[in-house]
Length: 307
Ligand code: PMV
Image (tube, rainbow, N blue to C red; front, top):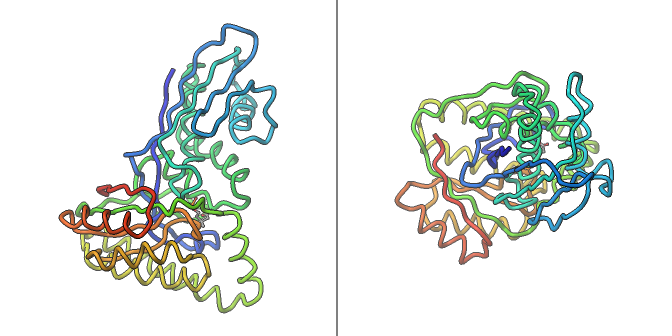
């Protein structure tokens, strides 16, 4: 039994989304997590995840290890029959801790593979709820945006605690994603934003409101296919993220190089401090922007068409 799930990228609204404002995110299908499950020929369940150097029996993993927790939580659902010993192979082309949703994609693929193996298909809402529990182990107080986009594999307009709204893209547009190669310390940046907010709630609530307005307007522009205005909104969102102290010299270098190479707009994406930035480009300038990003230190770039 095999199941897979795509990566994701946040277009607008990270951090403010933790405080109830909307955010927009889209799947990135060029990168995937894949889980393959077979019955084990001994009495143990084995997990192999070469990308993170994991070769272990389930019983040796701590209960709160995200992969072990997916399996335990899945088993605890009502009506799920006992799992026989399994061989679980997890592979992923999604860079870890880069803001591309690798943790959520592994959870979703694993839940679907377990459900498929037991012939107990789970509705998306249930897959999403299980994956959200695991996101909490990854970074404390997640908004839930990662698991939602990865589960539904559609562009999502997300507000914490509200039913998922997907939206349509009026005219496809091209993004170049540039990876700083520095693991994004999402838990830390979310914690630092919380400290800032705690010191001056009125000031930061206003910043979150401004980000929320940008997100609403971006959704409208994307639905109407007004590509050029999306770039300006990305730049405006990035300035507010700078104020929230979640950018970094490496991200700034990549963003600046994208602008110089002709991007229509650019911003950091996700938790910040490391991880990825995104640049909106005309199809024709995608290669030039990707080259400029590499020259400015990007460890990896992905060009993806959002549709
Ligand atoms: O670093 P990522 O892409 O997993 O995103 C984190 C997004 C935040 O808004 C900073 C946190 C959250 O839980 O939404």
